[in-house]
Amino acid sequence: MRITNWKAYCGPGVYVCLITGEPVYVGSGKNLLARVSSSAHHKRVFALCDEVLLFPCESIAAARELESVLLSMMQPSMNTNNVRFPGSTMSLEEKRRLIDSLRP
Image (cartoon, rainbow, N blue to C red; front, side, top):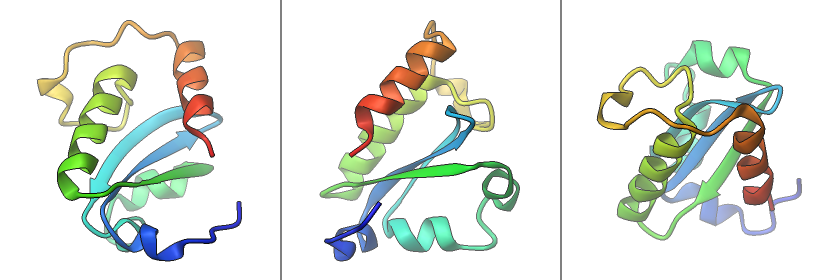
């Protein structure tokens, strides 16, 4: 993918880590590129994933809201603090369709 507005990725946003199309981790940060490029941040997750989707947001509040929605819907296996989100009834195929619908 070619990024034409790279500055948007330096602000708040959400990232989704995928392994063979399955969402395994969802996170957010106030500087999206800094968050996903930090070697200390979830090193194990990034080492295992084969794709990372980035979603710039207009504010950190919007990023946290999107993160909450995606966590609730997807229930990614590597997010360990999902206790505030009820179990998802989405099948893996439904999760993949949701991911496909979010792709640019």
